[in-house]
Image (tube, helix red, strand yellow):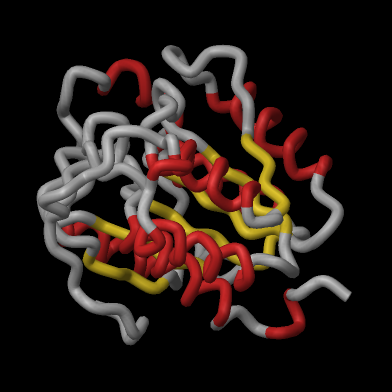
Length: 231
């Protein structure tokens, strides 16, 4: 495990079931205010994975919350979320990055995290200040029913990422074991944080706005080198 100074997170027992944050408590809103402040110098680019991120996915919740608090947020769009084709998805990511006006923090999930790592290995992505990679899909060892839809993204990149990165990995993720998360973190020179027992941290995880993850993103942004911040 890395030296990233984050606590060990357990399973949430009171997940939110909606992104209607007008009805949330002050306790739920505060993390987004802190995150928006930490991200104020950056453009945030959200990178969904296989099947996209539905309205209750934490990526969708963060997009709404951060924008409500003044953060600049872009979201990668793909023509086909169900049947990913790497060259097309790569262009979707690059097209979104071209819309940004400041250094970017990528917030990627699952196959989106693999997309980020592959494109970074190929293109360098000098506009990216850092990447927050959640539950990268282990396309080399995953054996679930979606295997045929993701094989085209092989091989996993082995090169260190050209920017600071953190990997959030769950203890019971069917797409990525903790041992493999250690391997990816080592190869990519990324920090590794144990997110607890929250499954694949995706559409079916039922974790609402995922406050623990938002706090981790806040600390990650706060700790980025000052040279990556916008002038």
